[in-house]
Image (cartoon, rainbow, N blue to C red; front, side, top):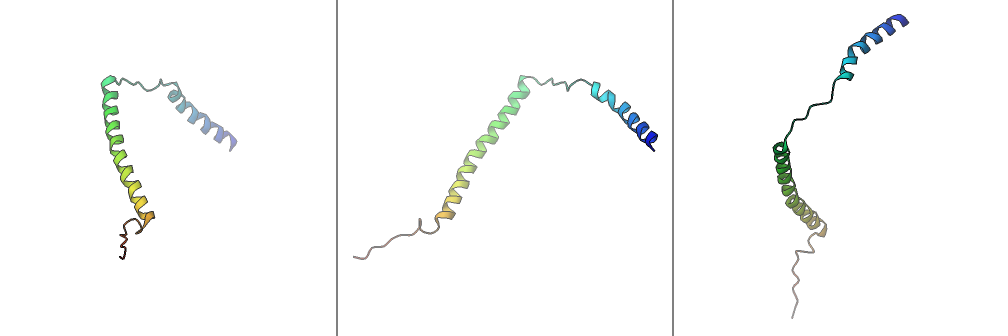
Amino acid sequence: MKATLFAALALMLSFASPAFAAPGAADHSGILVWAFIGFFALIVVAQLVPAFVILFAAVRGVFQGRQAGEIKVRNH
């Protein structure tokens, strides 16, 4: 039983060893690729700012309730 386990472990490690010898990923992205990604990141951030403003206004309106919208009428 032990011999079979060690043999299986040795076999699995021998197949996995070339994966550890592989070099890192080759990243050939130029400046245009990074500018393209940055442009779309800028668009996403520009869309998030108004969304947060509307979200905070809605939350503030919920917590203030009807008191902010009531009109006080004075009797003369």
